[in-house]
Image (cartoon, rainbow, N blue to C red; front, side, top):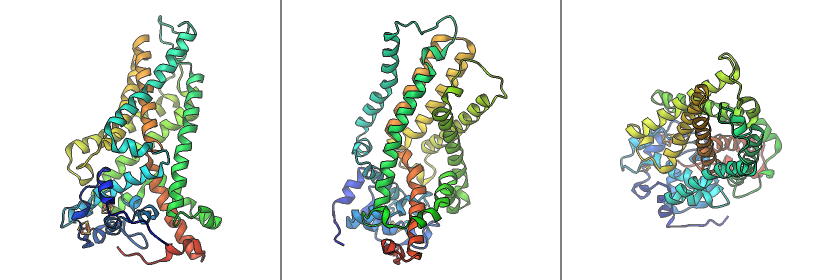
Amino acid sequence: MSRTVDPEFHRELAAFGASDIMQCVNCGNCTAVCALSQGDTVFPRKTIRYVQLGLKDKLLESPEPWLCYYCGECTETCPRQADPGEIMMGVRRWLTAHYDRSGLGRRLYTSPQRLWLSILARGMIPLVLLAVFHLWTGFRWIVTERVELNRFAPVMWVWAAVLIHFVFLGYRVMSGAWTMSRFVLGAGASPTTIPLAAYLAEWKTLLLHFFTQKRWRDCGPRHVGQWVQHLVLVSGYLTMLVLIVGLLGWFQTDAIYPLYHPQRWLGYVATLALIYGSVAMLVGRFRKREPVHKHSQLSDWLFPGFILTGAVTGILVHVFRYAGWPWPTYGMYLVHVMAMVAMLDVEVGIGKWMHLIYRPLAMYLAAVKRRAASMGTPAAAEAGQPASG
Ligand code: SF4
Ligand code: SF4
């Protein structure tokens, strides 16, 4: 098969944060030290070589960039200070942008101004919708003698808007996942060339890595703390997602339930998990002690920053509601929703958030390819080829 070679690719990748690529002399120390590099998925030397040679097609077909958890062990062992961990991160940003067929991901990754403008524009959507609703109803729905949040922002309307938004975001996620699958399963071939039995046999791999991210632990005892932080953050995030997308009619009520009611404690536990995980990430990025935190891009700050903003504004809505302050409650609720809409729109499908999907998906696809190769199907022949590190 003919390959497209782009000798200037390393310059393109520098815009995604991988700027030390040409320092690498391919000694292979990084691959030797990487605990996750094994079997037919070896990295990061091979990935870096693809970049140096401008082999974009090979890179697009590789699951390896997603199998890296950015523990930074390779960066600390590189004799050339090429920072292989950050190169892998830059490749993941480039891949995320490439899987997004709209091109928006690329524009937001490579232009902080566009990213901020996008956040601002998307954050205004709830404000405009709510303003239109109250203008249309002559402000009759706003109660100012006491807190009635579900009149200020009627929960069924809000829920309908959330569901419409999630259909749109779900399409983006599925589109990115489909594009990635087409590349990884082999030279742009259709995923339908792999037998269904191979997909079915590995579904547990997908769920296991999606929910546990457990390979992070294999990077060594020093990284178990990072794995726990991430796990706590993801569990809080998923709980909140279920409460808001699946159960908003039950979750956003004006009645204040007793503390033992699941609506209360589920909300509290999820909020605490989000605060713990996001603060731990932000503190790590401020301190810059670990290689993973040394080269934070705007996209790396935004994700935990948005999560923390969402958690803190959510708590304030709760406090103001308890205090019986209508306007502070309504105002803070609006700020909360604006921040969350902006976050979802610049992250889901096109930003850093997608590593939650792409990483377990890459593990799944690699396992499916191995499974298909063991079944002797031609579509997965490449999976059986020996790889050089
Ligand atoms: S990134 Fe560093 S350790 Fe890895 S192959 Fe290149 S020079 Fe060697
Ligand atoms: S950052 Fe860690 S997981 Fe990623 S390539 Fe380097 S050693 Fe391997």
